[in-house]
Length: 66
Image (cartoon, rainbow, N blue to C red; front, side, top):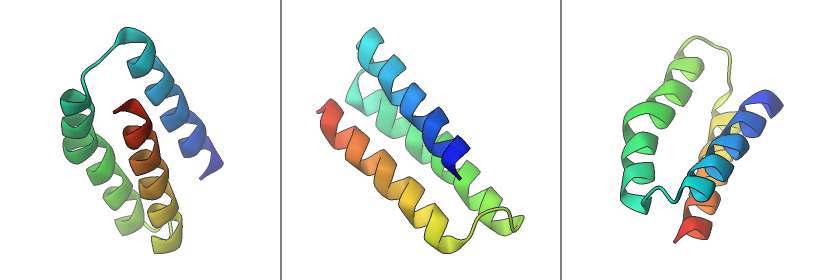
């Protein structure tokens, strides 16, 4: 899970540097990142608690972009 947090942290740093709009980030979260997290739960590679932590991390970073 720490690897995913690191990757997501890099993603948010990159979109911040590039000035990507919050709407695009929201779209990517809803259509790529959150479904990916869901698939990892279905595969048994993430627990629901870990998924909640990842989603909370994303939501916190999204608020920082606003």
